[in-house]
Image (cartoon, rainbow, N blue to C red; front, side):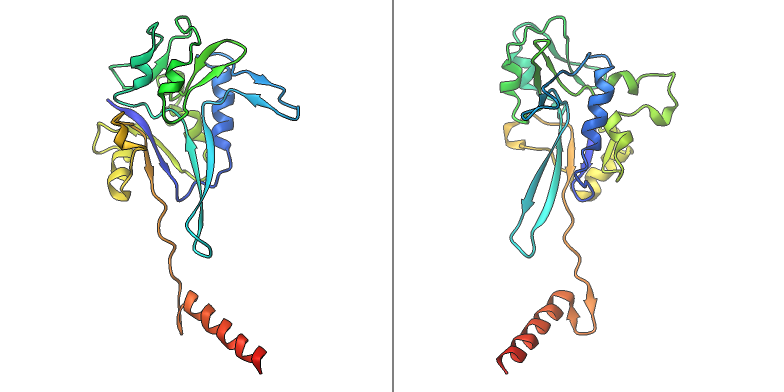
Amino acid sequence: MKLGLVIDLDTCVGCHACATACKQWNTSGTIGPLSDQQPYGKDPQGTWLNRVRTYEVGDSPDSKTVHMPMSCMQCEDADCVTVCPTGASYKRKEDGIVLVDQDKCMGCNLCAWACPYGARELDQQQGVMKKCTLCIDRIYDTQLPEAERQPACVLTCPTGSRVFGDFDDPASEVSKLTVQRGGEGLLPDLAYKPVNRYLPPRDRPQVATAGGTARALKSKIKAWTNKLIVR
């Protein structure tokens, strides 16, 4: 079993609902409170396990805003585990989830430096490292209805941009989406083998009109307007 997430960059709207739901659930979950510093001040800081980064891709007028949620990639060959001097960081054999034993962590930050995705954050108040657990306390909770045994970020996403499942199962939704949309892992050259996959944005559709595409029609209108101005 190899559990992870597929994230559709084409439908993510950057609403931060995933990050907020993650913080809310995990604050009361297995890893304990996610501390905040000056949450209502001029420079609020805090521990988040999922952050959404926003980029502008391409040149105007064909640019596209891409929102990119970032959390632990559950790497198969995780350097954060290799560098940990106390054995606090470990990868579960049964499902591939990377976790941190809070009782063993001494807050040395080595794992955070080893992670190229910025997926680990040191809780300043508790002095221990925190990271995404794929809501392990939810996905294995048999007291919950089966449909709710998913990470909080997946359940709360209003556009369905996040999908959770087993990448070892070719019939799972995450495996099918990865194949159909050409899902990719981040920074493959580092050979960490991230499990999570991102589905790339689709090309912007060209809307057909009687006189050609919408873009061509816009050019014609602009040229015609310029002629009127010259006259």
